[in-house]
Image (cartoon, rainbow, N blue to C red):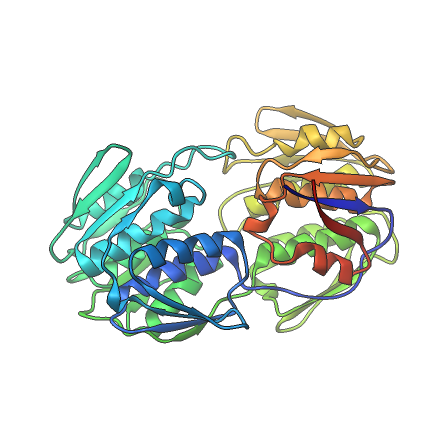
Length: 419
């Protein structure tokens, strides 16, 4: 099993290019099922989750051609199977995103329930209730969502809670429904907007993406088209925090600064100097130790839950004390125990972790528990004295493309080994 061996203590300095967004590419790959011709998806990150989604589409009979630039031509016209099997869905919850497109385009779908999630409960009832309201007949049996319909019907859907995948599934289904669908209390994340932009490029009629009310006028057909995935804002934030923690200076390229307002504000509060352009962000610390910040996660445009672990570890080496409150997932502090092994001064009370910064963390063997926790442990290792071994890094490969190579470009002493 692969692991990362890291010797920390030096600043991260230089330039790094950001890959396509994991949380945007997965729904876009699912949305290719809606078209009656092939799409060419560009800026696709080379991630385990992308490989899983491609395997899922391939099992359905979708034809996939991958270039050496990780551009994927996806032709759904030969689809002959409408099932998403448990063996694939259990490794990636985003597989649920094929449910809406399959129903809307083909009138049938059989998708495994995702099962448990390390960071907390992510119920799919909003997906199911919404599709039922649009006319689908759905039963849940044997661990599968079995759905059938004629043409879906547009309707007004008020979602109980803000859910990104729920918004995306229902948005995709609505594009081919008869009449107008109104999604209220919709997620506003940039990845939802990116999906809407791709659907619009295929011929969908969508208004309001990026707000809490999305209106969709159903059309009779969608055509495949070329589309480039938006840069990954969470990868961007992770590298910025790494530079902030290590007293470095970096230029992050091929990114979207406007999608990171809440994160950039907290980095400035931590004492970093931030400069931005259309597709780049520069972070300068002048060698200074960061200042502790208080963070409360919430749906976009507030502070993202996917950056919580990174700021938890930033506070671990910051001047002063800070509190991180997690409101989105109920079990997302599993990295705290591992950080304490490295000398972090932290305590958890309810959904808040209270942190008093220490001058130095110390390298130690640690174990990753989920994707963003993996990132926080790597950041901790980069700022620590001595050697850290991060195990179970298959989590990191789900969401970060060539992370050790990119950190190495910034001067980090990091290498991948096999245990």
